Image (cartoon, rainbow, N blue to C red; front, side, top):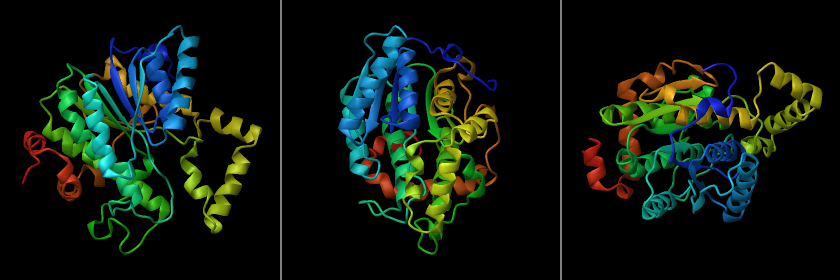
Length: 328
């Protein structure tokens, strides 16, 4: 995989079905758009029906420009801050009778003040990690029954390199930092990649992760809304790098990527025949890298997974837990 890609580099097999979370804006929208333009059936998992329907129209327009007049696009409501919503999404997807070849765990929050979901978990922990873990477990049986070369791609972040697992502070019980807890949630995604792949090592389903790069999308809004000096600093920084000459230089030097370029890296990992069967792959933008030492510690992975299952066990069928060797 070189420094630049085009859609011609990532042509998937025919009749692929993909689920993309957070597909109504930013990186998720660009990912869904590119998959649809490659001929994939795409299911958009989003909170807002209005925004999802607008995204579908945007994707149809892009596909028409590529000669695809009737892309197969579907919207299913999904609120990752609500475990019941995640469960309901998976039930509704299964009710479609579609196979599933690609699961893109993309949606995320970043740098928000400490807050808790209706389920009682720290928001970065649940939205970025726990709900995607639940979705993965609920949809794994479908992936495993959908033929060869099915893939799960976690959109992680390079910031996982600076994070560690602290079980006694997993929801900020002792200390909380906006960027720190985002970084932790991305570490957890990678740790679960290793833990789950061990349990499906003989299957045709592979799990991978990537850092898509520094991208100018709405994910930074949590920090932009901060009323402290940190928010003011970042708003000023955004004003500077939004200036056309500065923005051009950032993109030209590779420091910042457009959402379309970053999405292409995700799509490459999801469909490229060159990556078929490769497990626990991690890309930093367009280059394969090693993940952090913390993420590779098996005993830490199992500790996190055990706790996570306690959080979601009532939503996962017992037979799924047994099949994956997760039932105590």
